[in-house]
Structure formats: C-alpha cells, structure tokens
Image (cartoon, rainbow, N blue to C red):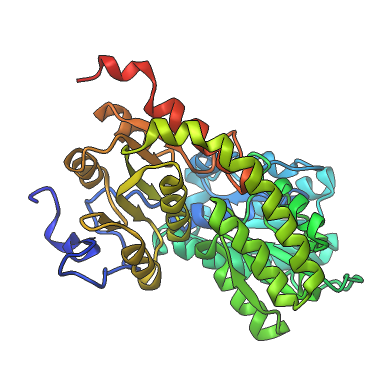
Length: 441
C-alpha cells in the first residue's frame, strides 16, 4: 500500500489481521493533510451551543469566520451564540499587543448584549504574541459582574481533541457556582449538541420515563443550568471524546457518577434509556423505559423493512470525529442490511478501537486520524457504495463518484433516537439508490 506513509502504518489495521492495538492519540503527521481540526476549533465547537453566553474570538478574523455557526445547534430561546464576535487582530496589534482591543471589545459587547457569561478564545497569534488574556478577563469579570472565562486554545498546541479538554475546563469553572432545587431523578446530558433539534427528542424520551434533565452541556445550553449541574444525580455522556474529561472532573470534585451512552441506532438508544433506569434502581422508571422502547420499536421496525430490502448487501465507509459515534453507525447500518468495510475516527482511543475490532467483520479497515489520500484509496479498494462523514470528507466522496451522507455538525435532519434511525435509513436509501449512479463509471 504505497499510498500509506511509513509513519502512519501503525495507525491502520484490518479486522482479523496481525495488528491488534492501533497506535492512536498521536499528534497528526506533518504533511499528511490530517482531517483533524485545530485546538481552537475543538474548544469552539464544544462551547458554541451555550446560547445565552457571549463568545468572542481574540485573533484574526479568519478564525472567527472558520468557526462561525460551525455546529447546527438549535436553541429554544436566546441565539446570542450564533453571532460571531472577533477582535480582528491586524499587523499593528501583533506588533504592539491586542489586550486593550480585547478589553474594549468585551466592555462594549457585554453592555450591549447582557450575556449570562462570556467565553474568550485565544488563537494561534495570541499564543505567539503573549497577550495577557487571563488578566483582561479577570478585570472585566469584576467590572461587569458576570463570569468572563478565558479559553486558552491556540490552535498550534495540539489537535481538536486537546481543544475538547480545554473547553471542558472552561465549563468546569461555571459548575458548582449556583444552587437550585433539583428533583430526585435528575441527570445532566453531556456531549449532545442539539444538532437539528436532536436534544429535544431525547428530552421527550426522558420526560416520558419520569427523568428530569437538569442541564444539557452544551446543546441548547444555558449558563445557569451549567452552574447548577453539580446537583444532578448522574451525568449521561453521549460524545465521550468531547465530554468525558468534564464528567471525570465532576466525579472527582462533586461525586457525580457518569455513564457513557450513544443515542444513534435502536440498540444504543434503548440501552441509554435502560442504563439510566438501572442507575436509579427504580422499577417504575424501568417499566416506563420498557413501555417506551416497546412502542417505539414496534412502530419503527416495520417502517425499516422496505429500506432493508433495497439496501441489503451495500457497503459503507465511515470516518467521523468520535469513535463511539462510529460504533453506533456500524450497528445502525447492520440493521438496514449494510456492511461496514472502512471505519475510522479522529479522536478514538485504544478501548474504542478494540470495541470496533470485536464488532466488525474480518478485513474491515480501521484507521485513526486519516487523510484524503488514504480515505480515497480505502473506499476504492473496498468498493464502498456509501461514505458517511463530515464536511471535510464530502469532497472525497464526490470526486470519487460515491454516495455521501453527512453525519456531522451541519446536518438538518435529526439522526438521534428512534425517529432519527428512520431519518438515517431514508437518507442512506435516497443516496445509495439515486438514479445518478447510472451515469458514474
């Protein structure tokens, strides 16, 4: 496989092959055009959905433009998060410093928009010139009476995954600063970003069970809910890559236990409901969960039959940000008769890849932190009919002449929950069975 760089070979394996432990968690190889984003982007996409906070990027305008509205996160109320603010650092600011420009920007924006909190993101250039963002934030917090939190995320200091950790540490500064009464059966949902309104589907499920969702971190998020998050009985972690660090910090300081779940596909969605009921040791909750699952599956399975009949035998390649999401996609594809032939992620760890190896068929290619050359070669070699990925993978699929399904931030159809599974089947069917493929060699 001449298209694989020598330094990348330990990050690629085949199920059933000789390589068992994939080398992961490494810095992206220079020159390989990694599909990963930078540290700043990682922190921004996690914090972005907090809807009643001010988000200001301290750096050149390109950084703000790159991450503006990058998640399709919907809000049931304020939409301050959808405004992209930047200090727009220029050459003069690089030479003489931009701290005063940041202070003036915060002063004006906080007075104008009256946010509940402000997140201030440092970018690469700020990491180089050394602006004292911490002291500016501390000064403005004292003057304005709201939390002003520095997010020290210069893009060059690591990868998107490092940005997740920095975002979790920023959120943790809010946790535990407000005490409100919390019902007995109370959870926080961590790592769902309310893409296309998916959180609202989950809230309805938990409401039917009798579970109170205390805080959603960060989809449709509110600052005061995050401040009170420590009073929940359980953290339910959907996107473990982005939020497991916050869950661990809350366990250590506030003794809030956590569960890892996924809301994609029938199996994982059902387990997410059952696992919460088991945690609370309540037969009443478990009975409600069983009733809900029985009703939803009874409605969904017959609706999936025609899609499974049409799609059986089709082959799919998956490359997404989080490995837990990739695992759920394998199960969802199997439910509609499709086989996964390539699977990869940007942020998976060794345990994630072991689960993938146990789940997938022999000869399935597993890849960590891939690049366009590799991905193009893998989907051609395996004769995939469908590529599931994010915005950076779309051009790869289209150039090859391959069907593509967006499973990332920008999507407009909810794919979580039981309704999401049906939406997923419809999208896969429409893509794979499109008449356009008659004209592709």
